[in-house]
Image (tube, rainbow, N blue to C red):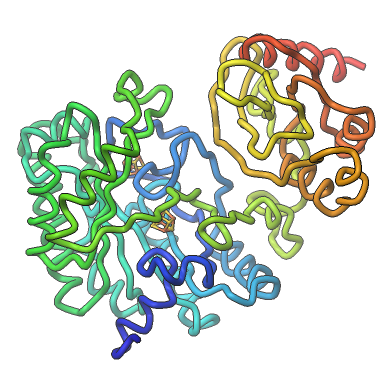
Length: 422
Ligand code: SF4
Ligand code: SF4
């Protein structure tokens, strides 16, 4: 049972309390696109890896749009408890937007718990203001406390408009992270420290990081796997295995409590941790144009030339080897038919589990199609006519293929271009 205000707030925050992850929803506001450092595991085409999955692009909202969207989401999610600012860049590197959003939350939604994540470079500068704005939970990513090792993890920092490299720059980042944590701890703020476990780079150093952030005042650490992002400095490294992450958490548990249920959420995630409902709110009518405004069609996701967002059904992520009706997870790519990047793995209800069930689950079928609403096409091994037509009514082309994913994507782009040409 929580016995003080801090514990009470933490007990309603799905990330700080494993027990509440199935009860309370959180909403991330993607109001912070810029970043002031370059982590070698990050490709800035995508969201901040420190608080979201690599390869997941988000809409960007203005503070006004974000605040309007909270109202809409809250009217439909009565368990909404936490509002977080988690990128897609660094919350503090976009201070004016972040502050305006936090002021709006404090004035309009005082019962919701504001939360924020940062790389920590600007934390000493803004920590007290965060406290005054009512932020009770802050996540800081600290991957190293050794500036020489940090040089392997970060390409540079940007400080007062100047790009800085080398150990002095890394020491600046480290000093600011630790100073920021200390200031927040002084005000009894809940501090979670994220640590990306990078194979062959910082693994053996992680216990030292955990001990240092504990000493500075952190309440828990969240050791996360490296998920290599295409185009990043660490794209060539393997993904950290779940087993290695679990073993490291076990080893560090004696020093600080470990978060073990992090989902590495999108910067625009909405809902329970295990059930992202952000796709449902992307056509939120109360938001002005752009961002979440208006239903986006697949055409609007064409980035330039003939790039499309395409969903793929695949069991092992190599071949198009799964029936559309059996897929519970879609790989979402952005592709021009030649070059493709995996944006995310998106869960959706099974469209069909067999004929009888298939006839009866109308709501679930609609939900599957809704989940793919931002895609121009679905590449799948087999698909029934009814499903094909249902997708088509939403402007989504179904393409059957049974070869490698890259070949299936090329086929889909070809068909989309032909379709566009009339
Ligand atoms: Fe990318 Fe986040 Fe690192 Fe910035 S802080 S470079 S957005 S991972
Ligand atoms: Fe919580 Fe992890 Fe999602 Fe952040 S990324 S909201 S810590 S589950």
